[in-house]
Image (cartoon, rainbow, N blue to C red):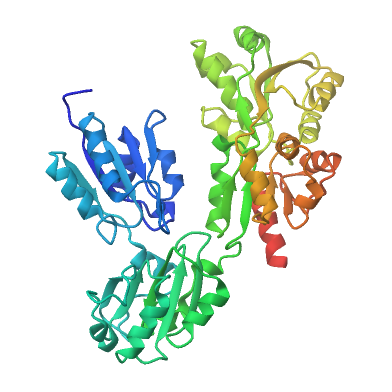
Length: 509
């Protein structure tokens, strides 16, 4: 316990798209001792939290409450009284039907300081992502935000149905899916034309977004047919008619495709970012983790004797990273490499090397070990000494062929690829429920470890309706050896090449 009382930050986590989080909200999450988040706050935002921060889920969904609101209030007070700074993540904006005001009052009554960090509310964002401007000069210049959670039939209702029905304002109901039929009935009963356009947007701003449109007369049946459930917002008014012209988010080429990323989490961000921008819902289930070798002595010895080498060859960004990690840990810097020539496989590896201030002398035309060999065919390497820091499980063709060309090759383990089974249960569940459209494989180890996670499961049956995408021929060969025939193979063996091939496949469909 401490005499210091912490501060509670009531943060609007936004409507679902992590990119809509404000800069201030991100800063609060990054510095908080405790992060308390609810059902509608994107779990991705937890990546900003400190590794030692306490993460507490207090989600409330459809009557299933992890903690009641009273207990959430007391939790915030308790953590602050213990001296912790608390980031309270609430979906949308904390003061727009988010009960943030109640939490602020409770904190104030207990002498706990707090700050409010506004967020982008789904009342504005979800319609925007569905192509519906809630105000438009040709349709309406004002809007009403209304809770749809209140029972519209109760005697003491605060709902002013006659006002809503006669108003020309856009009506936005939050949390109203269960009460849709009553909302529609009351609006029509009080004079709202039955042909008034209406839209429901579920999981707005995310790759799971789904929009159902109709009129007050038809919408209840259409929602039933679409099996649309909460969380969704309801937009009523003539602006809904603009969706057909202005829809943009759900027209992206990979919109709604659920794609599993098997790459190591630390390296997956580029692939996730590229696919997400095209509309895909990326499900990160890394099957591998990249770790330093159990024994770093051989690599350290090579670095101690670095003046003996003529060439340093990197076959991946991991090789670059772990080589320089050890180099720096040993108290050296890049000056000890000044006499060397360098070769890299792939532009990404080249760029990673460049980030250390070093330009590669050789960059093969294609991104395979065979191309390195071809590139060296025009270079005199007989009796030259080459250091090759790379994965423990790497193919042997490169050192073998370079040796045949007369070079002395030291093939040193710089890192290891290990099985990551953390997502095994989630993966099998998603496959069993047909919740996956595609799986990406970015290396042979991602394929072999993926199959290890399935264990005795019937892989062919589980993957029957799943598109498998390989980054290149080596990865494809590994897949075939495990009885997986890739549907897609990237023409350029890079992350961008893999994305391009996925895009071409689905556009062809």
